[in-house]
Image (cartoon, rainbow, N blue to C red; front, side):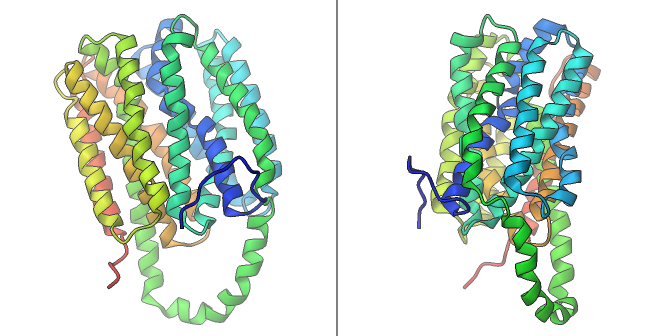
Length: 400
């Protein structure tokens, strides 16, 4: 059964209410990644950053999403989710506002890390609630689709609103959009996760002896580790490439306004891909969907080798964005299927770690090669292949 979001307010705690919360907050919280090429150009111009410094900023900022996961192991099943969201959203708003006023690169790093810690805490809630819906693949599809919709709006608006503005305008936009998210917090059941452990204790106690003897228990742990490796390597590969897309195009002689337009157009197939996952939901053909997506992602990175011209760069960007967002809902649903306590919290740890590793390593490889992108792109291809192998290893056997 397909689920559509309507203008009517969904009841708190229902799947529609959760989908609304996921859609609104994911659209805003992931803007930094989705418009990283635009922000990168602004930061280089304003602060005179070297590739390693730029990569470090993105790594620390995006890696803070990962650090937010660590305390979440303690509070996720204990605190009211509405209260946590309100507090973290307030911190994110303040952090984005402060970022726009800073002219010190060191202070900017501090502000971006604090802001991302707050945003990462809300992301933990988003991913956990996605896995609690009746159809996790659809929930994760909503998570991806609305990120891309917001990214498309910003990228298309960039030439009009931000071309002659400092990076502060982008940060203040994120602050205003985060404030607009606050009314949807009431659409989730704040005590959903606090009740879940108590409700699960009765059947768990009845089955514990059989579960401990089952070889599937050990197998699930191995699959979980492999699944986390799939997510980590996936995000290392894509974040390393995406953070420097503007620099790749610039190195090939493509100006910033043209590359921004190409990246904006690339959001169209990027949005189409998770929309398919959102409306189809889970599928017994998930393994094949993932395989097609990974091959497309690896191929798009390969197209970026050797200073691509405008046509090849545009094709690479279109395929890259489609494959990235086609893979993600099915990869996250694969992790959710494995089950276990804090599964999506651990997954978020890997997402943040991949964000942290990808840009800084890519920046170091670019600088060490005198501004070339070959080493960085080779790392991305290897990361994609590793992620593909791990993702294939954790898929459920096909049901006859």
